[in-house]
Length: 198
Image 1 (cartoon, one colour):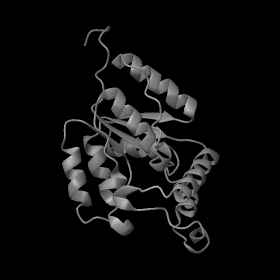
Image 2 (tube, rainbow, N blue to C red; image 1 turned 90 degrees about the vertical axis):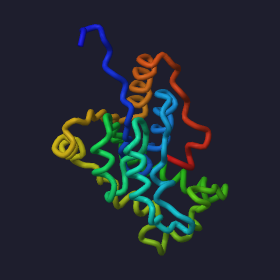
Image 3 (cartoon, rainbow, N blue to C red; image 1 turned 90 degrees about the horizontal axis):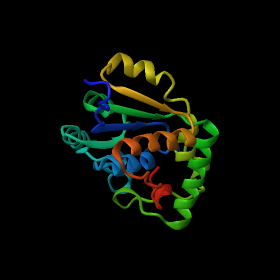
């Protein structure tokens, strides 16, 4: 490849991070920049009543078989499928305080507004935080260190994959600006409804 030829733009992109990192928000912005469809894995996984959909793995297999896509890297059952076909993994390694603040704010906002989520689901009443060990805020705290060692894991199981690690919102904006420069488009702002999907 000539020295002045820019590297090819990725066509299959994963965004990784624990709850509250901003995965879906960033995935949406990347999809806008690259002109690639963003498919939310939460939308494929959650059926009505927060019941896991039986077609989830089949739907993900269909998704990754495509030539271009942007999605989140989550749900252990399908992570290997996603890694096998992806070209780029963007890891949102935000500070715990940032992620937890976002989870709490998002959860309260969704509940107060009665925001409809995937397949008509809604956040449970805030009082369930006390009695439900899997309440999203408690689960986010319990899994806050879930991506330690991600870079070495990906290097071992998917050496073809480029990993970009972003540790702050400033890092995110700089990286998006660089990508926008390569594409020749402006950086898209976060969606107005980002609180319901990040």
